[in-house]
Structures are given as C-alpha cells and as structure tokens.
Image (cartoon, rainbow, N blue to C red; front, top):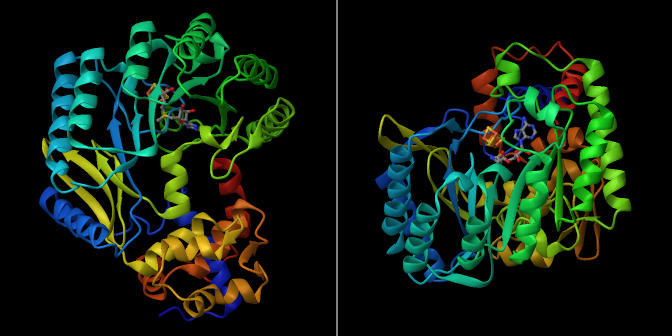
Length: 458
Ligand SMILES: C[S@@+](CC[C@H](N)C(=O)[O-])C[C@H]1O[C@@H](n2cnc3c(N)ncnc32)[C@H](O)[C@@H]1O
Ligand code: SF4
C-alpha cells in the first residue's frame, strides 16, 4: 500500500525518478516477463485483427537494429558490439530477412508508416546485404504514401556507391553521426576512423544524390572536448547545411566505456557541458533552424524522425527486429528483443488502454495537447476519464484547459519526470513501491540527489 500524504508521495516520486531508468519510458522494465517468439507473434496477430476491424488506431513502424560497429567509441551508450567477421554479419542479415518474411503474412494489408535502420551502425552492411534486406522488405510490405525510411550511418562506413544505392532503395532520411570534427577529441574517444575531410565529402555526396533529409548528430561535453573545440565543430556542421541537427549532451551512462573505466563527470565538467549546449542551441537558432516538435532543430518539420514523432504523438506500434530492438504492440505489449545464445526471445511488459493513455500523456507533458487529436488516437476514452486521470496535475495547475487544448505549465525535465508519476496507474505504482520499498527511506529528502542525477545524465 502507498501510505503517503502528498508531500511524502512527491518525495517517493523523486526517489522513483532516481531509481528508474533515466529515459522515462513507461511502463519500465522492472520485473519484465519473458516472451517467446511465438507469444510475440500471437500478440501481433491480435493487433492486426484489431486494425482490420478498425478497433484501434493503426500507425505502424518497423525498426531494424544492426548492432555492429567497426570499433567501440569511448562515449557510446548504445548497445553494439565490434564485429569484423563478414560471415557473422551475413548470418544476421539472413535472420533479419527471415523475421521480415515471418511477419509478412500477419501484417498483410497493413501499410507501414516508417522504416528505421538503427544502430550500432547499419551503414557497415555491404551493398549486397543492404539490398537483401530492402528487397525482402519490398517483396513483403507496402509503405504509406507519406512514409519515411531512415538509415543511421557513420561517415567512415559510407561511400558514393552506398549512398547512391540507399537513395535508389527509398531512403529519405539519413542520420549521420559526426559527434565532433576535432580529430584529437575523436582520437581520445576511440573514433579515429573519421576525418573532417571525409565528413565534408560524404555530406556533398548525400546532397548530390538528393536524399531528402540529412540529420547530423553532434555531442557536447565529450571526454577531452573544450568549449572552443565544440563550437568549432558546430560552426563547421552548420556550414554543411543539414536539414536537421541534434546536439546530444554527453551522457555518462553506466553502459559507456567512459563509466566502465571508472571515470565520472565532475561538477566542472557538467558546467562546461551546460555552457556548450546552451551556446550551441543559441547558435543553431540564429543560423536559420527552429525547434521542431518531438525532435531537435531543423529547417522544416518534414526532416524530423517520423518513427520517434509517431511514437510520441499517436502511440505508433513498432515491429522490432534484431537484437535489443525495442517494440510496441498497441494495447498489448512493450518489449525488447534479446538474442541469447542463439535462442531468440523477448522481455516485456503487458499493457492496456490505460497504459497507452499514460504513455501518451507522459510523452506530451511539456506540449500543448489538442483534445481532438487525443480522441482521434483513443476514440473509446472519455473526457470524464481524462479529467479524473489528470486529477492532481489539474489541482496543482500544472495543466490548464483552454478551449479544446490542454496547456502544460510544466517547464523543466525534472518537473516532467516527478509530476508525470501522478499519471501512473495506481496498481503499477503499488507494484513499484513493493519492488523498492526496502531501498526507499521516507525520512530522506531526495531533491538534491535528483537534481544531481538530472544534471549528470541529461
Ligand atoms: C545509435 S548511436 C549510433 C550512430 C552511429 N553508429 C554513429 O556512430 O554515428 C546514435 C547517436 O547516439 C548518440 N550517443 C551515443 N552515445 C551517447 C552518449 N553517451 N551521450 C550522448 N549521446 C550519445 C550519438 O550522437 C550517436 O550518433
Ligand atoms: S557511436 Fe556509433 S560507431 Fe561508435 S560505438 Fe556507438 S554505435 Fe558504434
């Protein structure tokens, strides 16, 4: 039982924010259940049936994870492994193709809104491997008219022929990880296959073959990076004129080699990183970019990551293919595919309509939510249900009504994470409480610890 008054409850929510994974996906993978490949397919069949009989909103993306890299960067928090054996990569491509074929009959007649190749590094695949995956996809699935195909790449694994083939195969958004243009910084971070000259040439080729949107990723606060070095890289990248620009603050997540080697970000590092991000964002805005909803800075909304935006804005379902790919079956399951010793299975959490609404509200907690849009995605939900769910947030005036819109007054990430927990299902909060009640000390004020954590990892 959650025996708290309001103040104690908020303190518990602060504790939970510290305890739970930092990317506040709901519901969290605490006490996940195991699902066989057969279980997952059965749940997708339920989804397909509901879509066919128009009982749920359809939006569907496919996420293909290529978890291989040529080397492991010191700062990287993504799941990936170094793989140089072409036979192993080839076998993995076979596995992805077979997965696509297996799902084809289940998804028959359902068009795909987004196809995302994420990493690791999809661009380390050879042209023939890339063609094999795309051919299997096109032989088995159909795309919606305004669909997006995104492909993640490093400059050092692309060349003219590959870019030409990606364009020919329908890639209309390319995400290029640049991170920094300072070769000394790249070297310290074990990313020494990339040079500034190479980045310039690759960007020129992406433009030559007219891939609709180029997104470039940079990181601020990298190990060994000075303010000057970061700003120089950013200026050079702006001059390359990508459609979208992401600046990620370096996150010293425990998965990084940085953290594994015992390094930590000091208060000075955090201050420096904050100054880079603030100055960087200002410069981007002055250079003809604007903030784009549920993404980063772009020349136009068209360039944003559609799969991510659809997930946040219409609770898109995601068919996850490949090791550690994250999937979502509307009203059924959130899951992560795991390949263990050749035996494939997934870990996941069952979800229902209430969880979908919670996810939707959490994702949009700092945006204005239009009620027509909300009820388009959740037609069976009522205004009465919604008002009841928003209870405390309305009481604290964190959300106010204005005509048909819900206006958010939640300004910071910290507030979003803490107050968002008022939206969690009661049964789910009870489960979390039970799970960590031995660690939670109601006499401790978790504010300071939380501020530090948010500062450190954001
Ligand atoms: C899946 S990764 C891989 C992309 C591609 N393999 C590359 O290296 O360019 C996607 C992005 O996550 C970002 N990233 C990785 N580790 C990070 C960290 N520790 N902190 C912040 N951003 C990180 C990088 O900007 C990277 O481009
Ligand atoms: S940043 Fe990209 S290339 Fe480097 S280890 Fe991570 S996924 Fe691999």
